[in-house]
Length: 298
Image 1 (cartoon, rainbow, N blue to C red):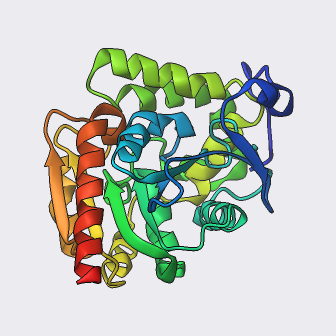
Image 2 (cartoon, rainbow, N blue to C red; image 1 turned 30 degrees about the vertical axis):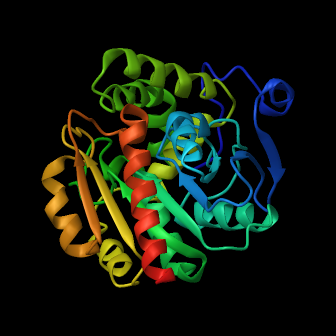
């Protein structure tokens, strides 16, 4: 799909970055916005976000993990938050390369604990398949990939011309509709929408969103799940019981394919478990990590 700037994208990133929190680093595909925090001696938890969210999505969960002695590395995927809107194919290869290069440039040599949510879970499984030696554990939260095809219909995205038309004409409406189904609590939902939509005022944001929908399939990914389950990486699966985006009825399929060592359903929780229930998500991750470390050391 040809790069475009949509109506309402009235800001440019380079000029805005001086006033933003966090750090920026030049990688092979572009500039990535990231935050690395926590005790230097702690194990590193690498956080991979979903289809729309910036790194600040992880703030509460990351703080909880750090309070448990862990180090956290969160970044905005290309096209999200305040990372570059790159003129490239937005697929799993791009996002995996971003995580690998970020980790390498920051000098993180020890195996990390990779956490992926929604689309980020698909990226995390691809990362695991290509770089299993660099992972200590894998945590998937409400993973995408097992749902039947949803709007926007694939046939509208198969053609660059049609995809560009839909993106320009209906893109913001589709984005806001997607955001509205993520979180159960109205106040949290409004906060999340404000966080995401602020970043979508930067040029190239809707282009990145729709190019991702074109090139990173969010359904029909059973083979990816199966391959991840065969890697032998200690895996934790978390799911909100009221998830409207990746419904809980997909849990049994995910379990049979992934064969996780632990699986937990989080009560009274929608799709954005790390945003809605940060303390419980962090506790589940930290406890799982500790259990795996104890077993490896014994």
